[in-house]
Structure formats: C-alpha cells, structure tokens
Amino acid sequence: MLRDQVYNFAPGPSTMPESALKTAAAELLNFRGSGMSVMEISHRSALFQEVFDSACQKLRQLMNVPDTYEILLLQGGATTQFAAIPMNLLEGGTADYAVTGNFSGKAAEEAAKYGKVHIAATTKPTGHDRIPAQTELKLTPGAKYFYYCANNTVYGTEWQYVPETRSTLVCDMSSDILSREVDVSKFGLIYAGAQKNMAPAGLTVVIVDKALAGRELPITPKILSYKTMIETGSMLNTPPCWCIYMLDLTLDWVLAQGGVKAMDALRRERARLLYDFLDESRLFKAHALPGSRSFMNVTFRTGDADTDAAFVKGAAERGLLNLKGHKIAGGMRASVYNAMPVEGVQALVNYMKEFEVRHV
Ligand SMILES: *Cc1c(COP(=O)(O)O)cnc(C)c1O
Image (tube, rainbow, N blue to C red; front, side, top):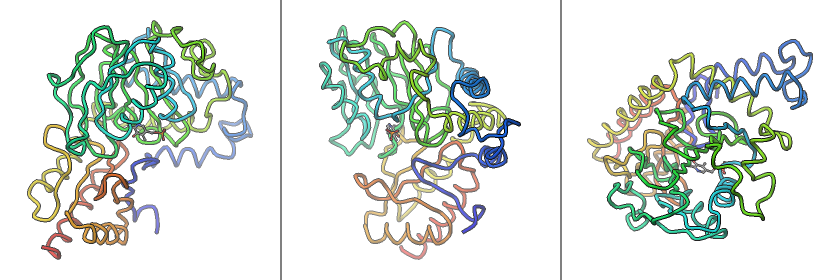
C-alpha cells in the first residue's frame, strides 16, 4: 500500500505528522550542513545541544511549563517511570494510586516494592469503563503523592478533571500529552512515553518540579535519579538523540497548527464523529461510559468476537489499519492521536456505517 492510501490507528508507536517525517527524510544524510546524519553526531556536540534545547524550549512554550520545573528527556519508556517515581518520591511513606486501567495498575504494583501503596480508587470491577469522581477518591492524609494515569490507552477512558488532593500530583500523560491544555503548576510531576503523541519509541519526557529532586531512596540507581538527571541536563549517559530530534520536528508541527488549543479542537472533532455514531449504532457499542470517554483511544465492540474480527479485517483491506483492541480488552480500538487527520476518522466512520448495514 502507499502511504496516502492508509490511515494508521495504531495505539503506539503511532501515526506521526507527515511534515516531521519529510523533514527527517530530507535531512537524514546531511544534518544541517554537518556532512553527517543527526544519528551520527555526538550528543555532546553543540549541534546536538541545539536540537535538545530547541525541543525543550518548544515543549515549555506549548505546555506553558513554569521555570521552577525541569524538562527531562530520558530513556527507558513510561514503564521505567513506574519504578523511578516511587524511588524518588515515596521516601518510605505512603502513596495514593488511582487504578483506572492497565498502566496505572502496573505502576501501583511496581511502587509497592518501594513503600506503601494505597489504592485510592479502582474501576476494575466494571472493566475500567469509567473514571472515578472526585468524591470517590479515598485519600490518605499525609500521602507522599497521588498518582493517576490521565488517559487509559487500553480501555479508552480519560480523566476529564484534575483530581484535588493535598499531596503532590503525579500523572502519566503518555497517551494524551499535548492534546489538551494542562495547568502544569498543579502537578509535581508529569511524564509521558513519547511514542503515542510526540515521537518514536525510546524517549520519555518527564516534567518535574525541581523542589522534588533530591529525595530519592539510597538504593535508587543514578540513572533513575531526577536530581542527577537535572544536574546533568538529561545527559548522565547518551540520551535518545534520534527521538529527541523527531520530538523537535513534531513540536514544530504542533506549533504550526496553532499549538495545544488547535490540538484540543481537533481531538473534540475526531471524538465527536466517533462517539456520535457509536451512540446511535445498532451494531457497535462504545466501551467507556459518557463522561469518562477518551478523546485519544476510542474503544468499541459488536459483542460478537467473529464479527469484530471481520470488521478489523475488512478495515485493513481499505487501508484503515491497526483497529484490533488490546488483547486484555478485546473488541476494537481506534487510536486517534494529534497526528490523525479528521479525514481518517471520517473514513473510519463511513466504513463502520457500511459494515453495520451488512451485519444488522
Ligand atoms: C504506552 C503506555 C505506557 C507504557 O509505555 P512504554 O514506553 O512502553 O513503557 C504507559 N502508560 C500509558 C498511559 C501508555 O499509553
């Protein structure tokens, strides 16, 4: 298939802005007159430092990150932060975790190795089809932090509010960062694996209040210490240079579209098309309850596994790719991150309508 015959609904790694890929292709062999690829230059070179600083500056601008926060560009994926967060912030105390899906559950399990974890809320009994209300959160007085995952990539739910807690807010924004406006100053730490909404796999963005650095447990590996990474400008060791370069190009695209406000308008448009159809469909049913629905990962099913499989197969034949749901959730999932054009969603809805007519 040709690139322009395809819409890629993969959950991550996922669709990237075409302009970023084109610039990368054009600069691949000779990066800005250096005679070398960006993959071949030293991470300690002035040329690479420019790329690094540019990406950080654009992210700071787009997310309105206060100067009291450091932006770290790290290796290890979001999963490494499941351990780094308690190792740096738990200090032998208790942390509150909201378990609303796959990744927050894993993060809570990992944290329990380093201190006390209190499950402040869980949506497991109903198959993670909703987000708990503020009044349902059972908060521990004196907790070191409150942890939640803003968007549940697997089940397709998303927090529509920022929880109010006395403790430090820690949030996994891997799958909805840069899709909506966030008041960074409410958080102690925000992090995101880049491969959903920002860059290729291999980069993790951590935005951390500098006042939280230096509290790590003695056993914390240096490579996971926020203090060390702040002091070394994310370069205790070699950072993921290529991914940082791709992040910079993606952020150029976000800025050119009109920034996070424009991303917010697009996410609403894409989600509206999908959920409006799902709510009137006689065949498909949305998994997540209204009020808790994700703007980034839209999960749905027919209720019959064979019909779901036929739908996914027929979609792929039309260039609507990677719509199969996560194996633990089943059904279908359309991941519609920032770089997914509204036309892609329209094409998907058109196919769903056609499929419905043939199967009801
Ligand atoms: C994908 C994902 C992760 C895991 O990311 P890795 O980089 O593969 O470790 C964690 N949290 C969320 C919300 C995700 O979507």
